[in-house]
Image (cartoon, rainbow, N blue to C red; front, side):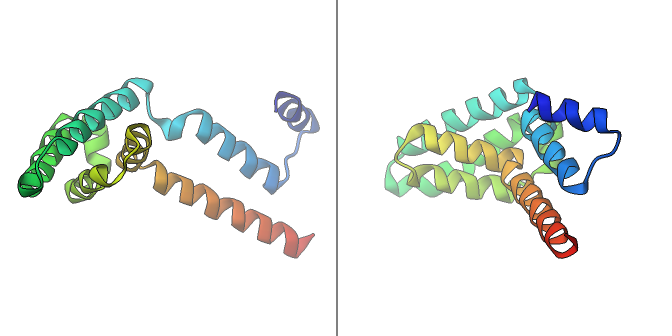
Length: 138
């Protein structure tokens, strides 16, 4: 990748497809601009919520979903709360019980709360647009 970047810099001009590829790589590298401490905070909160929800009896699940969503929401860094709707956090909490693999549950829930699933779709849409434009004009 570094060789390709050096070649792009040396060329003095960059094709749109190459520019889009660099943008996607940079975004992945930077986790969509999310600091590691925020990622760790959200993952820790999700892990705690998952444990609480999985340990809750069926008859009390609805309350556990709501309580965990409220606690998680209130504990999120302000920048993440501003980008996330509280109702969406409740939906994420409901999904935690369904995933049997704890690590997969934490990854999915953390990605959704941090907005990475939306970012991935945006990057995919950009890549598709660039590929289609290149194919049509090339």
